[in-house]
Structure formats: structure tokens, C-alpha cells
Length: 343
Ligand SMILES: NC(=O)c1ccc[n+]([C@@H]2O[C@H](COP(=O)([O-])OP(=O)(O)OC[C@H]3O[C@@H](n4cnc5c(N)ncnc54)[C@H](O)[C@@H]3O)[C@@H](O)[C@H]2O)c1
Image (cartoon, rainbow, N blue to C red; front, top):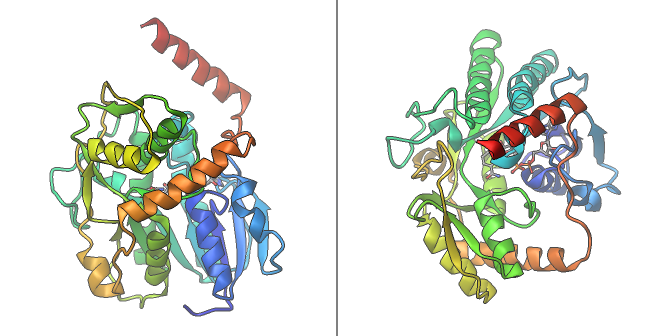
């Protein structure tokens, strides 16, 4: 990696952002970490705060920003369905207005810009495994659309800024990633299963557990991010980054039980609306152009993640909560919850 750059990482206090900041610093860059702390946590970046090359800026990407940087990694957006559905309008705004603000910043400073997109742009896919050329099957009016369509629109903006202003863009489509520093309360399947197993609570399987996902360990993903950013501009975008080994939810639960030694029972719950039944990246593009492929096996990555949650759950510290939303939003969320309960 070329060092001595000034790099803006939005969403830098989140799960993935904190690892990215760490890697970029290690390589000798100056890092400006921007976050509004909606789902991010100071704890994730506490170990970086004394590094003179690290700077923290509390800011919301929906508000325009002035900064002189060489590169921008845009990761700002809650990634877990629980959090992005809490205030769907803000989720769309973060994705769309946030992308516009950062793209304008990149144009002004002639910076290279990277978008953390998602496999959710493929929706509930009819093509398996998912190749970058597949346009997806997304419900544009469902409860996940604020995230899926927000990310799709952000991709559109990136490509339009590239065509219209010649901006150097990198777009990565991230498939399920896990590792230490995931939040215990964010409802993502890996953290859910581990926390339930460690607490001896029933492990909730949505549907019959036959739906599949592929899980990438965070170190592999961050290596992929940086390879894409540092690759020549001729590398085709977007680029899938993820682990192509596919597991059913039942297989994942069984492995978590084995590694934790937990006696938790598996219980089935109804499948949430628009939950995709299959997910697996085709990573031919990443292999060919970035010489990238994942190195960490699920068993090894899960063991590290379990060790993290074991320490975290016994530390006695309260898990950081998602930051409260402004009052009108809270009122709306409450009334929606009440309506749901009375139906
Ligand atoms: N983890 C995954 O498996 C996964 C999969 C696909 C895509 N992604 C994408 O990667 C990025 C990072 O995901 P993560 O897992 O680290 O999630 P995360 O929720 O831990 O991190 C997101 C960060 O963005 C911050 N943020 C949210 N809205 C913001 C705003 N308006 N302004 C400034 N900061 C804001 C949050 O406080 C948090 O620190 C997200 O864009 C997500 O959509 C992640």
C-alpha cells in the first residue's frame, strides 16, 4: 500500500470502519475518522486516539463537509436491519445525501473515493452465486428498501460522478462479514447466535434454517478493501468481496454450539419479510484483478469472535446502545411499534 496519504474514513467508529482505520494507520497514513456515533462506538477506536496520525471528527455525512484528503472511504450507514429500519428515512438520507456530499468533496479535492456497498443490492437473488453483472431482485417498497435502494442509489451516484466528472471511484459489494467488535445487540446472525449460545438462551432460527449465507472474516474483507482502493483505475467496478463458502443457518448454529460448548436449544421463528433465501458471492473479479481471496475459515474466525464476546459479556460494561434518535423520530418509531403490537 502507498503510505503518507491523508485518508477520510466515514463510519470509522463502526465495526468495519475501526479495522480499516487501524490498517491504514499501520501502513503509515494520516487518518481522519468521521462518525456520528449512531451505531459506532468510541470503544472501537479507543486504542487509536493517542496516535498522532489519527484524528476523530464527530460529524454526520448528511451535512456537507470541507476537508483536504487524498482518499475517501465511505462506510457511514448502519448495517444491521434492526438499526437501519429504526429510522428508515435517515437511512436513505445517509446513503443518498451522504454519498452526494462525499462525492462533491472528492470532486473539489480530486480525491479517490470508495463506496462500501452491499450484497443487499442483489435483493433476493434469482442468480446464484451473485455476479457483479446481475441487476438484482429488490422490493423497492418493503421494510429493507431504505437500505437496499439507498445503497443502489449511492452506487448510481458513484458511477454518474465517474462518467460526468471523471472521478476515480471504487465500489465494493460486501457480503456478510463478522468478527470481534460486532455489537451484541444488532441482530446480525453471527453475533445473535454467539450471544444467545454464551448466555444459554434459545438460538433463534428464522424460517426452517435452510436459508444460506456466506461469512467473511473481517481481516479478509479489509485486505480486499485496500487492494481495491490501491488497484489501478482500470480495475472494473463494482467488485464483490466476500467468502464464497456457503452455510445454512442451521449449520452455523450447530457450529456455534460446538465451539461455545453451549447447551442452548434451537427454536424456529417466522422468516422476516424480504429476507433473502440464498447469498453467495462470485469472487472471480476480485481473484483476477486484485489477486484477492479469503484466507480465514469460518471455524477459525468464529473462535476469535466467540473469544471477543466472552470477554465483552463478562466485562461488566454495558454494551453501547445505538445513539438515541431525535424526538420526532422516536415518537414515530414508538407509534409504529404500538401499531404492530395491536395488530
Ligand atoms: N458488516 C457487514 O457484513 C456489511 C455487509 C454489507 C455492507 N456493509 C456496509 O459497510 C459499512 C460499515 O458496516 P458496519 O458493519 O461497520 O456497520 P456499523 O453500524 O458498525 O458501522 C456504521 C458506522 O457508520 C456510522 N454512521 C451511520 N450513519 C452515519 C451518518 N449519517 N453520518 C456519519 N456516520 C454515520 C455509525 O455510527 C457507525 O459507526 C456500512 O456502510 C454497511 O452498509 C457491511
